[in-house]
Image (cartoon, rainbow, N blue to C red; front, top):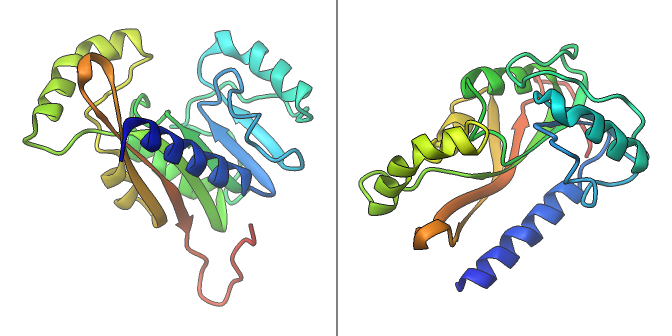
Length: 203
């Protein structure tokens, strides 16, 4: 697969996954609202953003796109929402930069309703023992300073699999990166299992 085909495939997958979200949707690391063009208009959107400098712009973009609920100024490690209060969580290019990914995953499992979905699109660490992994390690200190704490070596898929959520769908992509070093990406859905006898959320 060429680089252009890989990028198109990832973009298509992202549009499909994000466009299928329904109900009350929490977006972690919402930034300036870059995903509003992909999100369905009829969802009950809640944005969560830890950077206070982005909150006003996120609130403006959310309201402009028909989502008047004020964004939450908080980290994904400590989500100020009740247990089982959202139908879905969206995270795109955010798990690389959280301080404690295991705590974040526990928080997502807590706020999701039984049967709820976590939709993720993330760049991840290359395979151990490869030159790409070595290049990522060299770049890591620079990335953490210049890219909001991003850890390019983080094995995000393993953390998702180790959480209380179950991966129901995942695709792997390789895209060109800086200095000719290709970067692995993942995109997929993880589910919070519904207790026996309880109907899952219908998204």
